[in-house]
Figure 1 (tube, rainbow, N blue to C red):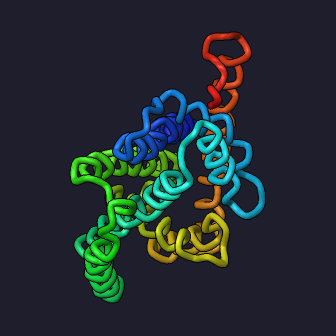
Figure 2 (cartoon, rainbow, N blue to C red):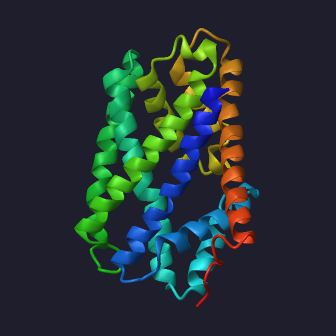
Length: 255
């Protein structure tokens, strides 16, 4: 139980980090919006995260930001960097990690190929050298740090949850576990036929883990992490709503 509670705490921490991506992009674009405003927008729109399709929280947040006077182009840049930049970083770390740590030779070679492929996507950014698409070097430095902090919190949440299951904790190396989590998240994200990677993420983790347990059982146990995320998000949203209703924090400002 302590591992589950700790995992929820780490995921809530990751939730607090997410708005920093939008803040970094918008500040670099000359907007004066505050972190607290972006955080409140994110927390207020958490319920829409669980609507079918998996994109409605992003849509709702974009609407809120636009109502504050932020241009559609800047909002598009926020969405682009929240997804592509963080996923690219996760892909680089996870594929390199699997290559270095996984004892399965086939997985290691495949991961190395994907790592090189991920590196080769970086120069494509220069195709968009127009100022309207490229941020400053300092902004990308900050984005790298922010995304790294988010993934560390997310990996810690996954590790805390998985380590609370004795059968898994006994035979799954911690470092390999979090690397597999990152890679499986990336695969689930790019699987456009599976909203939020549902099903894909769990199957990839179970396949990579190669535990001495029935495959289906591992998939079901990994799927439990989604329940932890759901509970963590509800707790975050409930705390925000409670503070707002008691006047501890104000309403989201409008333009």
